[in-house]
Amino acid sequence: MRGHDLFRYAAVAATVACYAAILLGGNVMASDSGLACPDWPTCTGSLLGPTTGAPGIEWAHRLSALVLSLVIGAMAVLGLLYERSRPVVLRLSVASAVLVVLQAILGGVVVDSNLLIAAVLLHLGLATVLFGLLLLIVLLANLREIPRRWVDWAWRATEERAPAPPSEAVPDGRLDPRPSPGVGGLAPPG
Image (cartoon, rainbow, N blue to C red; front, side):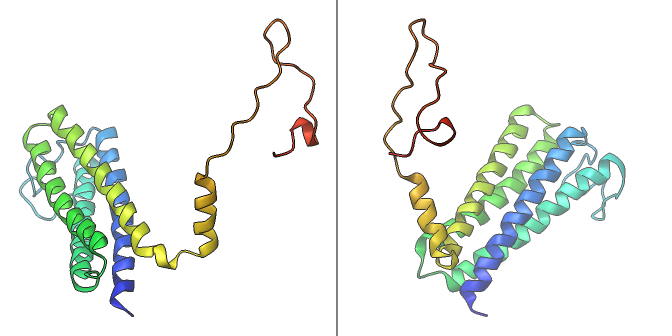
């Protein structure tokens, strides 16, 4: 297996791990479990957190963040090893490693600040930015592998078309209920 392929797989794994961490973080918010583990990075003084109740929910999110950090770290190392010929991909992978470290620190700030709303919102916003960045990395890393017909379709989907002519209105301003010529009342494409 080539190094580029390892990087591609790591990028996909990082994106999936990020999505899982975001879902589990949403579960922490929805279940009001944000302070179930009052200390950070441990949970009630233990590195082996609880598995049930609100502390288990919070601990699951922290474990998913740890897995995400490890996968992004591996992706960044693979990027440094194998993606030097594609500097944009390399820079984005290093940026994602920096973001995940900032995200972990911010997670600690959220707990230490007793869920200060500004810290919580910044934590959520940074998670969204990280997820978007990982999606971009996956796209760029896999662009060569995407079937050409899909790329062609995407280009066609972004092309601008002339606007459709306005519908005829009856004198009182309502749309004319008479069907337009063509199949099913639709005008043929022009």
